[in-house]
Image (cartoon, rainbow, N blue to C red; front, side, top):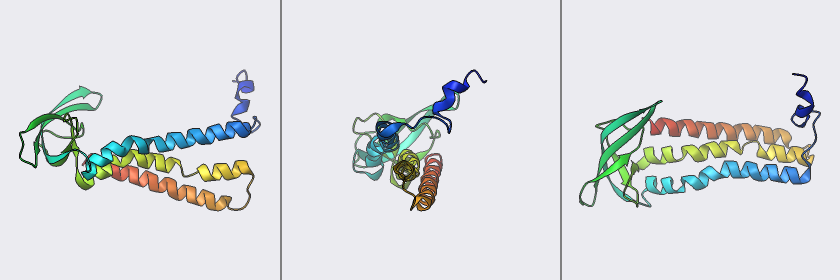
Length: 177
């Protein structure tokens, strides 16, 4: 173990400071990791809220186990407009025989849950990113040498992280119920 200690000094209390440029890079990476889920969720949120896609009803026809807890589900989507039914991929957390409100993607190949359940499920990933932002203000204040307000930043960090975790759990429960 002692052979590796000289290599560990960059992550231990006695290690080097990342410097001004390193701090900027770390903050930008932190922001990218935490805000990227929001960008990736826009399409799913538009579908779940009805701003994109075709509204209708999804009847899950079959779910095939792929192993390791993964499933491939297929269903029949019937548009509210009265058009013909379409065979689509259903959410892997569906059960055969389940009937639910859904939105057909613009590509017409997949149907996702609509309404409150769909919105909460679509907010799961952005909630993880939101929770990850909780302690960024504290880190910036620490690096800036600010003494005042750091306790408030820690308290705010706990609140933001807890809110992100709670919304993540709520979204997961909505997605799998």
